[in-house]
Image (cartoon, rainbow, N blue to C red; front, side):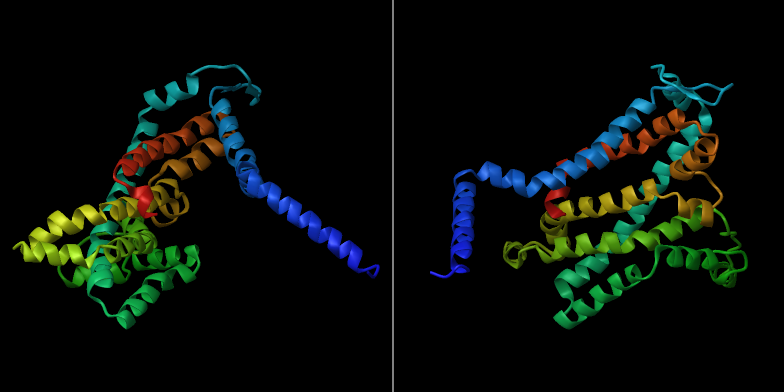
Length: 300
C-alpha cells in the first residue's frame, strides 16, 4: 500500500463513521443542517425585535435628548391619545386593505384564465408578462407611475377626455394606483397556482351532478382556491403596510413607515419610534392568524 493510499483510506473511514453517527442520531443531523440558519435568525431578527420592544418602554429626556432607561408606558399612551397617530395607522391599514382587494379582483380572472383555460404556450407567455415588471427596479416602476399620475399627465388627460375632472397628482388615489401596480404580480402568481391545483375530476363530478358553471365556481372552485387568495393577500397587505417610499414620493399623506422616519426619526425620539414600529407588527400578527385559519400557509 502506497503512502497516498493510507490517508485516503483513513478519510474514507472517518466519513463512513460520521455518516453512520448521523444516521443513528437524526436529531444531530437536523441541528447541523438548521443550526447556522436558526442561529442567524435568532441573532439578526429575534434579538433585534426584543431590543425594539425594550426600547419602546424607555423615554427620551427632552432637555438632554438622551434616552433614559426608565420603564414606562408613556410612548404607547401617546400613540393612543394623539389623534395624528391614530389617523396615520387608519390611513395605512385602509390603504393596505384597498390595495389587497383591488389586486385580488384583478388577479382572480387572470389567474383563472392562466390556470384553467390558457394553452401551455399562452400560459408561459402570460407568466412571462406577469414576471416582466419585476425585472425592473422598484424605483423605476414607482417613478413611472409618478409621471403617469402627475398634473396634466396621461391619466388626467384620459379622464378629462371622457368628461371626468379629477386631480390625481400627489393624492391617495395616485398612491393606491401605484401600489396596485407594484404588488399585482405578487397577487397573480399565488392565485394562478391555486387555480392550477384544482383537480379537473372535481369539476367533472360537479357537472355530472347537474351543477351549472356558476354553482361549480362558487361551491367547488372558490373553497379550493381560498388558501391561494389568502396567501396572495399576505403579500399585498404586508408590502403595502411596510412601504414608506411610495406614499411620500407619489402622494402627500403620511403612512406608518415615513411617519416614523420623518416625525420620529429626525427628532431622534427612538423610544417613540420603536413603539410606533410595533403597530404594523401587531397588525400583521392579527392578519397572519386570520390567514392561517384560511389555510394560506399551505398555499405558499
